[in-house]
Length: 406
Image (cartoon, rainbow, N blue to C red; front, side, top):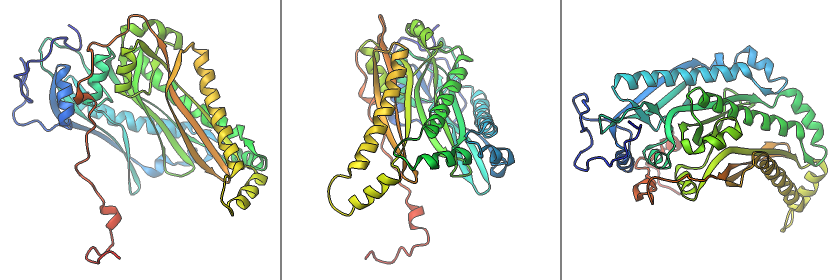
């Protein structure tokens, strides 16, 4: 029997009920929203309880002596990468233990977060269990997709297998920082920094792919990329999370990119491109670090004194953008992609007149026979949930709330 039963679930079944599935007594406490509940039911599941797994590490342990030494030469801090990866895996393992205890075969909306407490960092995994509506529907999985995204991906025939992540902790480093400092005297790309950023980002992708292979997946969809400081502003972690999946229609093209296709298209975008006959090939990215240069900095400072274009800055940012997009184009050409979709660009101020320009997108290719199960998406799959709880306590802490605004 397939992982996702093709028949529509019985519309008379209400949340908390099941066809031949025995659940524990009492109400269900789920993290699924109303829209997610509808979409999960469309693929043959009903909600289960919200589940949590965690692991707490001493923050000093994460920023130990070994990592401090490594920051002197820049690049990846392997010891720190491994520690963070261990914390993330421990929390996911405990999440899966709770999932097993709940007698649910699957979970959706799974996260992997870092929560910093005084002196400690907590690795936290949260998600919602789901139960099959039909007893003949078999298969176990965990997915980073929420309920709406799950419907889109399943309807596009990407069957979820497991939540996966790839991470890398890195530092620009003192030595390479000094080399870059000399380069700042001249306007143009700081290749030392560009190489570090490109290398670390590709390490995260490689590790994500390797984890997907361990689950016999041929695709990782819905990839989300996060960059966050860890213990120090000079040390950062880049983590990519997604859902390792299997789609028989992409087997041939997966072999051209090492066995696993990768995509950071949203679930809705994935459904749409599948409907048009496209499949993802690879998440591609290019980053360039540029220096304004001492002379350019002085010119820009004078130019800021009057209105009008700061031509030096215009040229700098234009050059960084072109270089980053050229790297994306080269990667896409190497794997025989037809197009690159969903390109997003980001500019970061590295400091001292230095900027990083990042371009990231998904290379795609036309594939014969690929299609969606439905003719169109239901509205519930594309309606965005609204926040109904707004917390502004941090902004008012220590403020006399009785004092009128002036």
